[in-house]
Amino acid sequence: MAKYILTIVFLVLTAFAASAQDETETEIEYPRVIKTSVMPTYSVTVTETSPGIHIVRFDGTLEYMSGYLLNTLIQRYKPMYVDLNSTGGTLIEMLEPGQTLHKRGIPVRVLKDDICLSACAYLAMYSPYIDIQGQLGLHSPYRPTFGYTETLQDLYDNGAMIQNLLTFHAYDNGWALYLYYTVLIESDRNTYLVFEDSDAFHSYRWAVTDEQTFTGAEYEFEYKKLTFPEINRRRIEKSKESLDIAE
Image 1: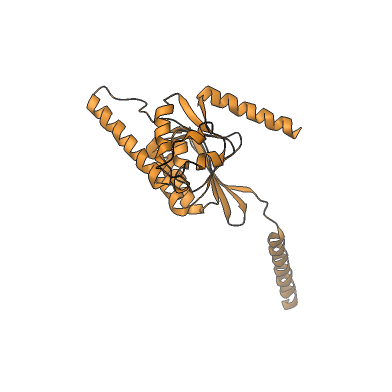
Image 2: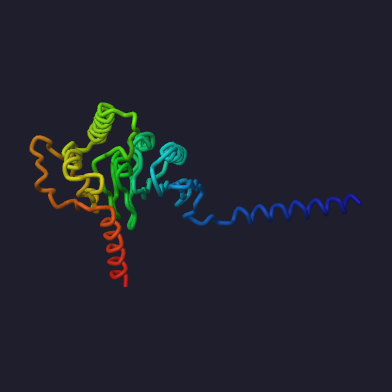
């Protein structure tokens, strides 16, 4: 009887060891999505490209709680890159994730066929480096709506507050103020200054620019003035060009 019990115990332990060995030998396939948070107008995805190496991607509109969620996942996973694909949103949502990008020195990417416009572009500017493979577009900030109880003084004060915020934002993150003033003068609510090249955009950093002699003349053709429909048409044209080259 004792031998019979010992035999059963031996077989059970052997089976358990074999099962554990099979689990150990099972390889995890990379890249793999390990976290996805989907909201009605935006989503945030965390992809593990290799053990311990992560990429956080934001798609959609920067609006209520999106900045908090994006910032939380950036802090938790400490990604190698943050990929942005957004038409913009409210500036207040860029503050928390932007400060984390700046503090941790995390690069931002705007991948091929992606766009990063308005508040998204200002968010990207917190990063020490922006890899532009798609389109990044800036325009002069505006208030989308205002209440009937607001006075002209309220509107003026709010506008001045936004302009002060973006002025300090540009300077604190190493961007020449000439870029911000160019955006104010050359764009409006419906027209963006669009960059499709990383080097052209980074040439506006004060770290590599002499503000005293910087006239912007040499960068005259480094950006395109496009409306949103034109940005979409440009994106489709670039995709077709890529397909033609691949064929």
